[in-house]
Image (tube, rainbow, N blue to C red; front, side, top):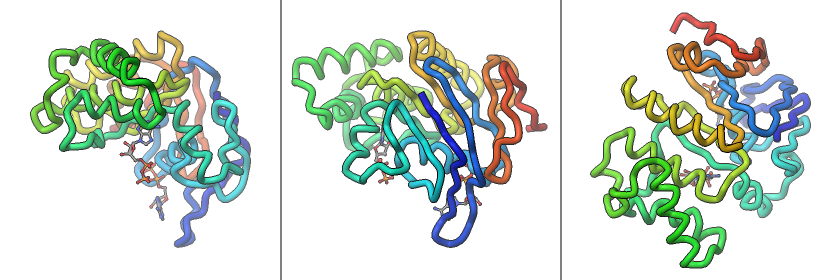
Length: 228
Ligand code: ADP
Ligand code: ADP
């Protein structure tokens, strides 16, 4: 799914965010990305979904050559990747239904297929009965479930979650993890950046730790490894 070779990223201000990352992630894996703030996790994630360009190195994501990709090819990469963020990033004036449908309209699905698929994914995250609500009328956990529904609507092979439970209380966080585990069980590869020791140490998965822009640990069924 992801083949990364000696990826380096220097931002225009001179900060070296990634200093030679080499990693393979296979189809169907569930990977936690851990590390202190400023370690390079978000930069790693942004390079995978084409939001930042690597300075050097090689990355293949779902068959796309992300480093040499032209800007106009990014939409094709994004069709294969769903992304969810800590702050949900829902469109505030659109309903739940419209937020999800929007992700399908941009890939030119037919109206009939869009209706069917939107209700299907809302059902999958337990929000079919809130399709007409706007984000402000939902709890944080519900908003994150909408964001997940939107991210998986196109059947992505890869789902990236950047601290998806960062703004949620513990009970709600476990609900979100249950949904992510179901999505992974159905075959979608998941990469999740997290600061949750409880989650990483309870739901055991591969753990990749980044420090100073380098991978310092890569463990099968690993531990969180930090105090908090
Ligand atoms: P993390 O997600 O682990 O907190 P980041 O990838 O956000 O780490 O940041 C890695 C380093 O790159 C930090 O030193 C951060 O300040 C810097 N950085 C992140 N984004 C930018 C940017 N757009 N411009 C300049 N420096 C950045
Ligand atoms: P920017 O140009 O500001 O970095 P993007 O074009 O990356 O913004 O993303 C715009 C919005 O689309 C974001 O709010 C994000 O939530 C959403 N988005 C982008 N890519 C994806 C994706 N692959 N899956 C789901 N949502 C996405």
